[in-house]
Image 1 (tube, rainbow, N blue to C red):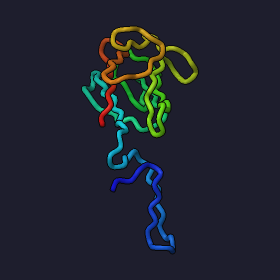
Image 2: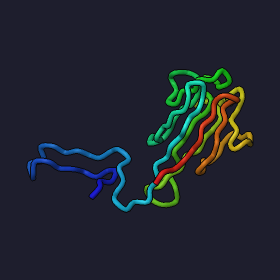
Image 3: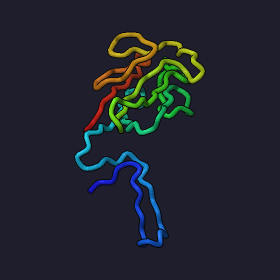
Length: 141
C-alpha cells in the first residue's frame, strides 16, 4: 500500500514515540492524480522541474525558483500558481506574465505561439519567454 499526502505514521506502538506526516506528493495505489512537469530549454540546455509547490517564480534572476539563462527574459518574468481542480486532490497550474507586484515582463510570454498575460496550462503547452528560452508543460500519470 502507498501512503497518501497527509497520512500519519505512528512508530513505537501506543507510546507514540515517533510520529511522521507524509508531506510529499506520494500517491495512493490506484490514484489517478498526475505529476506536473515543466521542461525548460534555454542556453544552459534542457532540464525538468517536477511541480509540487503552490507558486513558482520564473525569470533571469537567480533568486527565482526556475532560473532562465536568456538575455531576453526579464529578471522576474512570470509566475506559476497552483489552482485547485474540480475534484478533491486535483489541481492545475496557471501562468501569469510579470512579477508578484503585477508589473509585466519586458517581452511577455507566448503560449503555443499566442501572446497572453495569463493562461491555464494544459498538456503539451509550449511557453516562450523569448527566442532562446521556452518551457513545455506536461502531466505524467
